[in-house]
Amino acid sequence: MKKNIIIIVLAVVAAAAVAISWTQKQTLDQRQQEIHERGTLVMPFDLDKTTHVFNQTDAGGIQQVRAKDPNDTEQIQLIQQHLRAEADRFSQGDFGDPQTLHGESMPGLDVLTTQADELEVEYKELEDGAQISYLSDNPEVLNAIHLWFMAQLTDHGTDAQPHLAQ
Image 1 (cartoon, helix red, strand yellow):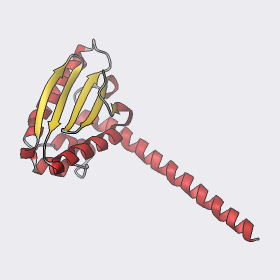
Image 2: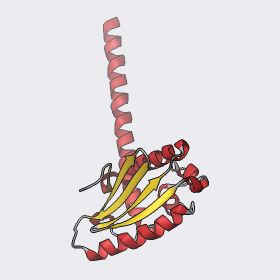
Image 3: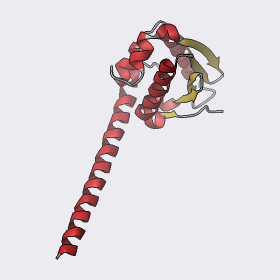
Image 4: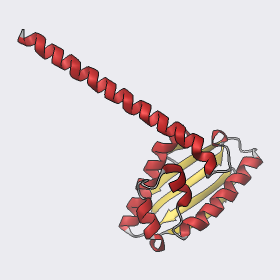
């Protein structure tokens, strides 16, 4: 009898764990789909034709957006225009576009916004897109960059990857 109760309890716990895991996966999938769909609010390029790349570094991080087709000059031009403008805004502490897309409570943004004077932002064109480098020697700002990158990787799902594409 006691053994049967233990087996039943274990089965219920296992079923609950599977249900929670499934719910979390569905919630994450729904969040990523929502971010993908809302991307057009702040990004002029097609997320289906581009890839976001987030590379955390000891000095901060490098964010790239690259066209999946290196001959897609329309997407490349849109990426370059957008990231150039974003780099200008970010260097002034204006992270309004990421807040619009990801939400006001996105990890790292509060520090990046309030400590923009501790953040160096550099724009660079790439043959297939563009990149923004974020540099700081302030540990709090470095941590904020890394938190922000991790949150973007989670939110963008398959539209992003965590390393530099070659």
